Amino acid sequence: MDLVLKESLPEYCKTMRRKINSEFSPLPKWELVESVIGFKNLLNLYPPYLAAGIQVESIDEAFQNITVKMNLNFMNENYVGVHFGGSLYAMCDPFYMFILMKNLGKSYMVWDKAATIDFLMPGKGTVRANFQIPEQEINNIKIIVKEKKKTNRVYECDVVDEKGEKVAKITKTLYIRKL
Picture 1 (cartoon, helix red, strand yellow):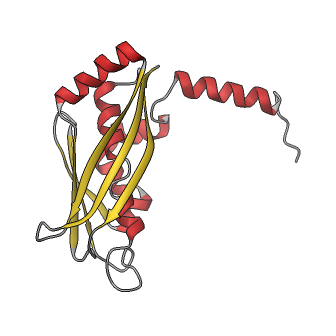
Picture 2 (cartoon, one colour; picture 1 turned 45 degrees about the vertical axis):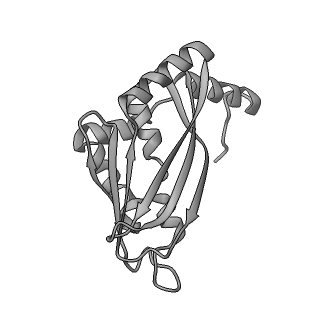
């Protein structure tokens, strides 16, 4: 069976760039599932999170505070029996972006631009991370983007163990602009 392209590859790429730039929002399949089971359940059933044992514990009503946990298990422990670093990062990856997307709406592009993780000590047992962006910060972003058309914002989060000791520190840089 031959694949027939209706447009050339460069034209297709231009079309996709236009689509991404004008419609930067969740894919319809994710919006449908979210509308049926809710955002928290969508994430908790997301296969990479399910396999790694990552769970969203809570999301506040304003969608400005999200708490995530991960129990140590066979699927996320490393060679020496502590949390695999990739799983520690995965549990922290999208949440600042989600908070901003939900609070700013579909007329803004929110994109992860950079990230770092500092491993401070071995993670054992259950670890947690809390992601919070206050209303004042969201309002500041709107003002900055209105004036400057775009902004980069840096957020930090600690991953803590059951004793409250810091296991890792995540730093995320997000790019935000109006569509």
